[in-house]
Image 1 (cartoon, rainbow, N blue to C red):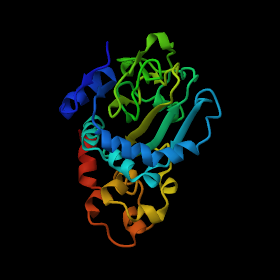
Image 2 (image 1 turned 180 degrees about the vertical axis):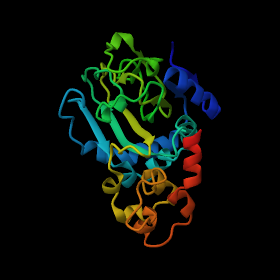
Image 3 (image 1 turned 135 degrees about the vertical axis):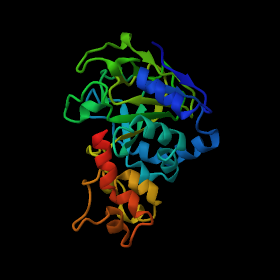
Image 4 (image 1 turned 60 degrees about the vertical axis):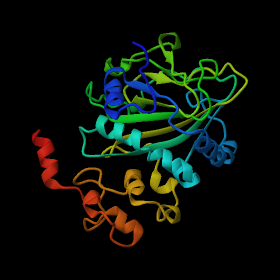
Length: 287
């Protein structure tokens, strides 16, 4: 099975179907060159200030820069990309809602060996989720061209439907090569890893992932984004960051208050979205 590939005018339902089957899909040239340049400019000083990884999995020649909502206004637009959110909403529709899981630039330096092949959902303490029950939908945006030589993300298409705790070599994977501005979508269950960078240049990828709202976020958005910045952000982005109930009975504050109301100091514009609905939750349970 090869990595499914789409143009930037593809229908969300087509991409979602590919994700369900192959566990991954590339959509080419989603971000315009001027948008991409602005994004790289905002992120550059933060990447430069980030230390290299402390171990082989993180990458000793790789910088992983997070906290991007607070650091980059342009990154907020990537997080809220309409095509991606449409696909994520369809793919994770079996749950009440989803939330932002992490934001991170992954800058793989020259000479970095290939990352061990793994599943991202292992971050949840290696819990054995039932086969076919997806808990994440991930993206990695190519801030520079992704090539096999410079460390394009490696994937095993179709492995999202295979058993847990398998081991794969890089020879059993495919490189998600793609031009700058493209995006690789992949599930939390697919086996993948960063490729080896055998080039003389850094490979820059923007990793933005989403997960079911009843699971703990990998990146703590409430501390990563200072409250004074959060209060200036639009409500849909704040709710995606986690300032909302994760299901009917998760995430409220003290006397059943909407967390967004607590952050803003006044009632949110759309309280229904934040408070959930018991009838709809019960209906989901019955179905």
